[in-house]
Image (tube, rainbow, N blue to C red; front, side):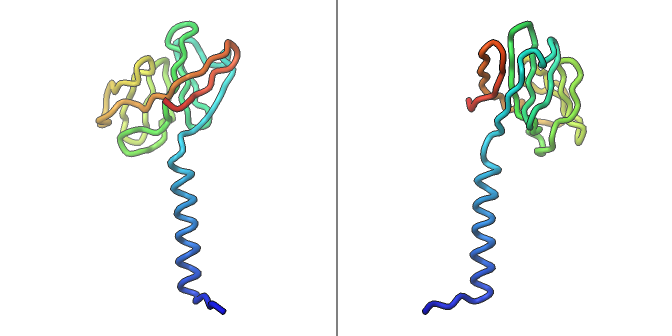
Length: 123
């Protein structure tokens, strides 16, 4: 019969939890929204995805996570998204940095649009 010490049990539990946590965190968010709910010339945040409609019928999807220090972007004004943690700002037509300390643009996702629903897909 094999015995399991308290230390071995705790180590195994921590390892299992860490593996599950990393697997979940490494997955890109998935979201969908009715195309009519994405404002023209602006954007909306759904389940950690920023959906933008720069021009009529053109949809973009970006990660809500700021590339600077991984805070969540929470401010949208027109086609500008701003991370209020350190004030990096991004153009939602292109994802490019328009101000602040972020060294990289937003992570862009592919978009599926069936005419009614818009969803992000892995690029």
